[in-house]
View 1 (tube, one colour):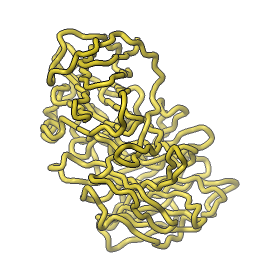
View 2 (view 1 turned 120 degrees about the vertical axis):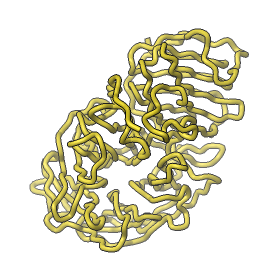
View 3 (view 1 turned 90 degrees about the horizontal axis):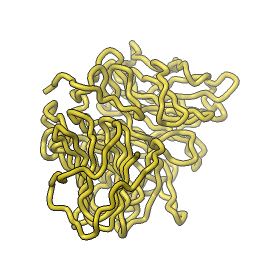
View 4 (view 1 turned 135 degrees about the vertical axis):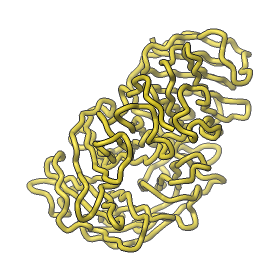
Length: 467
């Protein structure tokens, strides 16, 4: 079901293409104070097409982006340009640099088979496909894509982790050109099930200094599950392969929402920062945004947090600065009474780019609304579960999957005890919500018929909004 668009939902501070289709973020890196973003792109239509390109954009603050045009285009013999990553080839191990360290992109060539290729640049803007592509050939595997390259200090080489159907595979190289397989993971530990996509592997330390390796992978799942999600595993990496060492009763999710996929981290940073495609593959092609489709999440600074349920990945957004004011302090003892709309607003919302904060010791329902009757609810209940409910948030009949009850409510339990500080960052059509030191994260797309103009809090606590 596709409907005509009736208003402009384009975000102000989240990357979107000028027009056409965009999905997975690729090749993220930082060099000389400039952030580089590449992404899957169809410049001819706001729908996915097998003839994918890579677009290129740059930013100095991760919030405002400059379009740098197309970086890669389909190749006649090898096929479309699917997802991948980028590294700064320090020391020019590839020999592709001229007078300095080249930028090397590694990507999937999607033709008769999926194979891995590279392109290089000596100015960071113009990229040349390597004449010897593919560097990791394949004539057997159906699903074999999304290379994530990183510097492997354990073996003093480069390592790439690749999605290979029901598992991931690891390859090592001294020069980014000649690769040997070193291991694999996931045939028995796939958790959510489905097809592995867009893997990433990186180390993080807890606050007390314990180091773990995080293996992230987006999972291409059936629509019955509610669309594709991203999970992560916590363990160790010996330089050749990953082994899970921290177990959990349920698969660990990077985001409790249904609109954050293909997350990947930046190369060249001291901290680990991640960005995702703010969409769901199940309905990304029919969202009512007009001449373009696809946007990126805010970048998130990652950490590891020890919670009552074990070690968990946490993320805090790189978001616009805001000055918050406590417009209304909710009287103590007032508690939520089901999914209700308050009789009156407690604060007005100015514009469609804003931050809302809730500070509370108990259950609450945060309600965003407009005169059309559209409502977005964020709640914490007595069983210590967060819920984000978009079942009445606005236009939803463009997709059966989006409209379904399964997709309306995303729940997750609290991982930390004590008071709650919850932040909601909203930008025209996307709500990114964080609490409990970022161990709770939820990305939700909504399409209100008119902008949300009012906000109210039910429950004991304090509501903060921007002036």
